Image (cartoon, rainbow, N blue to C red; front, side):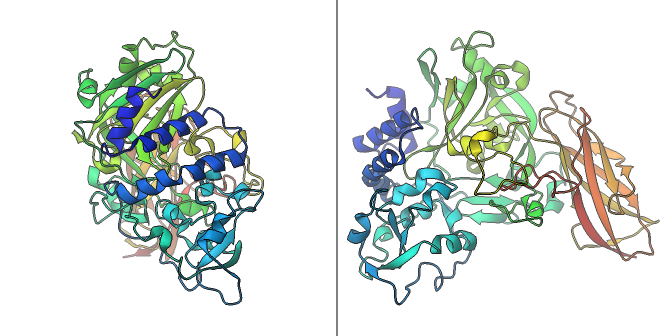
Length: 552
């Protein structure tokens, strides 16, 4: 028997357009989460059986949001193009290869591929099996990260034939773009991908204000931005240990005391582009601006849970799971979780936020409700919050189990075991130079140049000092201006803007600036990226180095 809360949540998510088949599909998939050890074929068979529901979602849910162009301009003469000399297959032929025993085939544009040996190495896990025995194109329109040269180069190594010309494009012929109704964005944002939309502001604008304007706050989306009607919106909270569940409207949440905090949110991949210079990694090529500082207002999560009888010392739950209303083709939501201790601690300041910088949270940042987990990696600050679960277990979502984890520099994609590393929670201390920029010609005045940037540390640790070097790290001086809010350790959730003037040798034509920050527990940054390189390019907090030219 489906819970009424689940049915209402699904109806709201899809604008009351779900059929009974869709709801049963969603319910079946939620049950499947409880047994992650099932054989791959059973998962595959379930997903193939769900194909009709997936196709309907993609074809008819044209109010799911989107962006306008691909991450890269793909060479259509190279990827998925017709190859003379290869055998030709129809989609009917491909459909006969939908199990491990028959070898798993998929189609992409003009090509047919045997991906049986790809599956164990697929970063997205078994999700690629949604296209088994058919075309991957409907799914790749949503998971646009696949539209990149390095992914397609790898994919082409599994090519076995050509798709019949009569079947080319048939799988996406009548499909609406799931990214067709995205919110408008500020023109200054620099996209690292457009489907889904991910972008950061120019560095020089990032530190103009201690509080980052909403329009210039970096955007990190994993899926299309959902379009949510506040009037029908509900947040479901479920305690797995007691089977208690309750639905809250936005008006219900606003009845609780309004709590406001200043908190920095940072993507786990901030500054990844610097780590890539050591050795390539997989992930969006973020610069130094996948970070922002804002005021967030809403109800404290601990207050809401207390009304359900869930308090510190009175529950056996170990984790608090969050699910968003942004979903993939199989209606699986973005998900994540945090330790229960953080959620239930009144001093942990976990907020069910409905305001950002004194305004309703913009769609790109989680309208109408986002959980703000201050001091913790952005991936746990789930947007478009639809469900909270008190559980003995972590979220089983991909982003908790198979992503956003750190590894030793010797681990590669052939040896990685995501079960061996814990999910990132609190982030390490970090800093960056925002002005001057790499390669910029800087005016020297009285033997000094002006330098400014940001520093931040996770876990509520306050920045107590920022050191700057103008000779590649041989000599250092402390920045003389540190601007931050008044919060103290261990509840200093916001960043610090620093400014200083550093002496330079005027006989030099070029110098290398370096910065490192020190937090209130005297943690500091590693010297170089070679020592902290990891295959996902996360936790990139080595000294930030900027080479500038000197002028008069």
